[in-house]
Length: 455
Image (tube, rainbow, N blue to C red):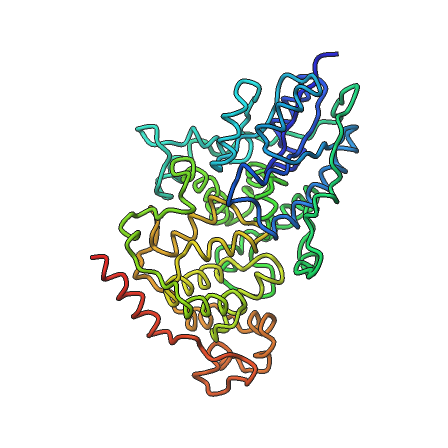
């Protein structure tokens, strides 16, 4: 029998449309491995909410592999050290994996050298192919979208193999439970299971359901209601439980799917940004904003705590932040409102909010998170102007967030549709709901004054 090969899983936890898996099966016996690497990412080790998802996703993947006659080997440590050790232990000579673009994964890929065989598979088209005339990644999304058209539709997704051949002797594996990915006391993720079922099977079910509803996306995506106006596929995409091209094939034939497909392509764009600017999650895209004086004192810390816990006195902001904490997710329109509020109304550095989202979101993604926060903050390469300050009270009313607020801020459940967006102005704020920590006009003027100092 030929020497076995390693199949290195990362954010590609699926069997369907898995080019690295197909290449490994063609090469011979396959040893699938997932490495919990908290060292290589440094400060960007995966957050608490992602760990909850990862536990369940790995459990699902292990079961799928078992049904194919294989198994999932779990190891912990620096990937660039663990994988060579596994090569020596198993007699394998090659590692097959899907390309990733986070700076720590590129570092690990470079360290593995010729033993690593990389395959495109987590994007609509290989990121390296979508470049400017000068061969550089695009920094403006509209230009990226136009360039992507020559690669669409993407190649047809690959079917999962009928069987995955294994080695004569399997290496030892960690036990998933020993990794302690799930919170215990306090179990802040106790309600996650009400909203989420991680794993490839659920991702495929959601995609099938979404294909029937995607035509309403352009309008419904802006309405923060308890009804499903968005796909809820973002964490499945982040963990690679479904590939973008498989989702594209699922929904592209539906009526009015273009807006959603552009959002799907946005994920590819953000990976292109971090390929060009690896430190984009910690450095302003526009250097002029390095001189902006963010608030950092005790008052700012108190305001940050109010924002994190959903106690700002702005119902739409508080509803979003409480949804984030309870469910590990937040409606996309409300993400923009809450982020703008932190950066503009409270004048707190966007990187502070980015880190909170990184720890709390089940779909936290290095590129997407960084590009979106810098877009809202106005500090990015393709971003809103800093002077664009969202008005949370009018946004709440405009997009009909009343029932959404009632669900997540029960103190306000008894208020009318007219009063619930701004209880202070209506003169009916309940005693157990906080007053605004800052007025809208006051926050807006403070942000604009700070921006004027930059010239």
